Amino acid sequence: MNPNEQKLSYPWGDALPEFGTTRVIADGVRWIRMPLPFALDHINLWLLRDKIDGREGWTIVDCGVSRDEVKALWEQLFENALDGLPVLRVIVTHMHPDHIGLANWLCEKWKAPLWMTMTDYAVARLWSRPADNGQAAGGPNGQSAVEHFTRHGLADPEAQEKIRQRSNYYPTLVPDVPRTFRRIMNGDRISIGGRDWRVIVGYGHAPEHASLFCDTLQVLISGDMVLPRISTNISVFDYEPDSNPLPLYLNSLRAYDDLPEDTLVLPSHGRPFRGLHERIAQQHAHHAERLAEVLEACTEPKTTTDILPVMFKRKLDVHQLTFAMGEALAHLHALYFEGKLERVTGDDGLIRFKRSAIG
Image: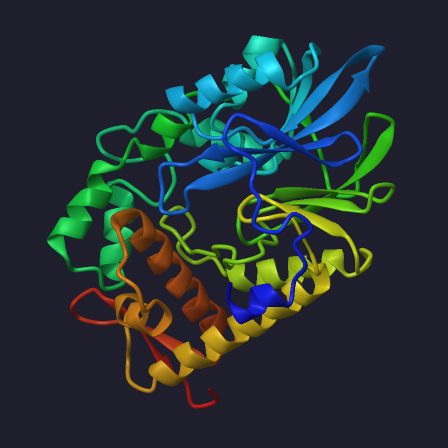
């Protein structure tokens, strides 16, 4: 456990529910873990006891990726963990594959509606289309991503080819998205099992990420906006190459300022914890440190690839590389749009950043 983690409180310690089982963590709230085929090897999902139009059942929050082994684990849960009741609704916090991957399968199986934000629903529908001539509809893969990363200094042919070959990566994890949905928006109050859950929308990590807070239970389903051990990925990718997501993310965290100090945080990765405001302060400090390191490194012109060893000390696989490149560029862009860095495209076609006179 790192020093930052030690400042948080974990009510269940190191004990984790096995895949395909549940753990009760609050009245009407059950914790599920599902495997992921990445270095980040799990996602937390949530079952909320519900009643809609007189029908007793469950609301599922987030779904896992579309893999046969994950479907099998869900079937195991349907058999053993729902108390013989149906799924009434599926809520998805945002459009990343580990959250929406099996939404269509779950909604079809239970004839249950999908609830999520408009922007993330639309992006998921777009990205789940198969790639056309190697061009992914979106996401950090395919030929468009190769060109984007190459402009920012990625010259390794093997890495370029691996990214190019992943043009259908998103559709393999999210093969379809329901054709209809119920839109949720910031400030909405969703009645789940007779309790209000307030929607808190955040930006920077996903287009329109929805967290859910229940004041009665003092529980926050934080999705990926607040995680206990790792920092939330904030990236600039090819589909929005001039974006500035880091300030969007940091400003979004202010929406949690009014939540109680002892709020139980249910994150998408890691363990449920208390210490929300401490963790948010840690995130602000973390990014301030990274920004200072990046600014110092840009005394001479640097590409995004040049910044990778400044921010990431470990060896990166291709999946991690795309997110590391995106995150490094997000920090460079934050400094550039603040006027602390200058951005120049050289005769070699590479984009470089250098500390400006006021930086």
